[in-house]
Length: 121
Image 1 (cartoon, one colour):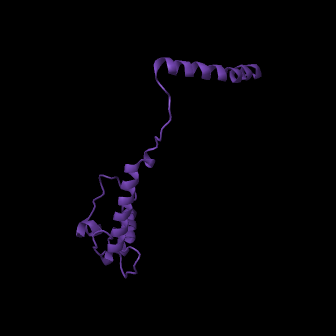
Image 2 (cartoon, one colour):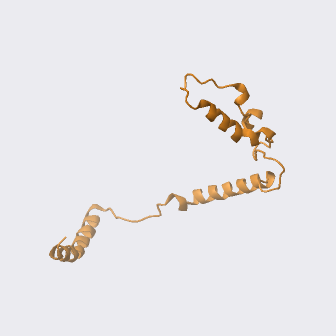
Image 3 (tube, one colour):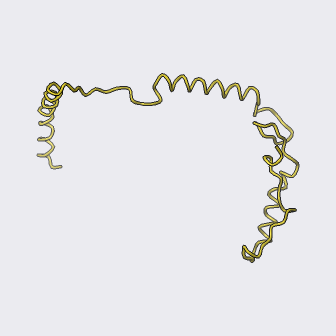
């Protein structure tokens, strides 16, 4: 915008405001602002407080910060097997064996699988 255009625009604002007010009175429609942010509604605040209470109860029942000698699933309480430490070694071995082979030629063996915690529950 040129400086002249900026001046015309600024000087026309009061006139535009008067026209807007006259149109609102003529049509019986008023432009108003309202609290529109969904996080500020009463229902949302109540739900958020309820969710915080549920989280605190969950953490009190299943403390993820306690000292433990082994890995365990916080939700189910299932303890990890000792093979968890071998997962990286087994994965590296499989990748090494796959070098210079096509995908269709490589055969995955059951002995090279690690038992996951979710398969034990």
